[in-house]
Length: 154
Ligand code: HEM
Image 1 (tube, rainbow, N blue to C red):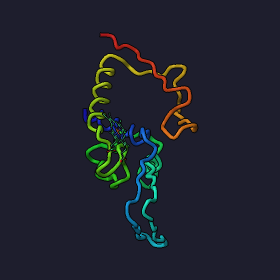
Image 2 (image 1 turned 180 degrees about the horizontal axis):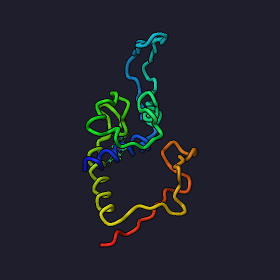
Image 3 (image 1 turned 120 degrees about the horizontal axis):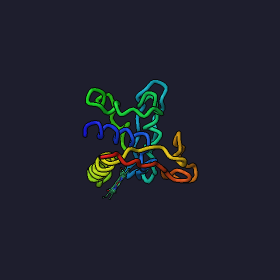
């Protein structure tokens, strides 16, 4: 189950369901520079901010070799290297996803039962490598996602 958790976490890094979360600024605020050469960013009340989950998860400064699917990023030895607020498939703060624990439990339960009986195999329609659709703001794939289930003999 530990490895399952690592695989699910890495899947949500590479393929977060939501591309971004948004927030509305409720009072004027200035983000002060933290690095040499940066300028302050002034936010007005009412400004809408987009926090791009997909881009942050694929930034090599946050996740080296970001295109590589590597569950080891989330191992007990490595996960403390993940910088705060660089991994947020369920959003952030008090309005983050209320269903996150249920979603993770459900996903693991489904895959546990499927993997007990089936091997997942590529089929003719399986897209390798996976290419995200450019027609939508959500993470979707033109032609759908296809995978074969091969029953494991008892
Ligand atoms: C892998 C599955 C899921 C992912 C990746 C996901 C992701 C998210 C994200 C990114 C947000 C926005 C959070 C923010 O703005 O900071 C959100 C909000 C929300 N999610 Fe999920 N979600 C998942 C499953 C679920 C499930 C199963 C439920 C309900 C059973 C659920 C209920 C909600 C609700 C009610 C909100 C709005 C929370 C609020 O505005 O206070 N989600 N989710």
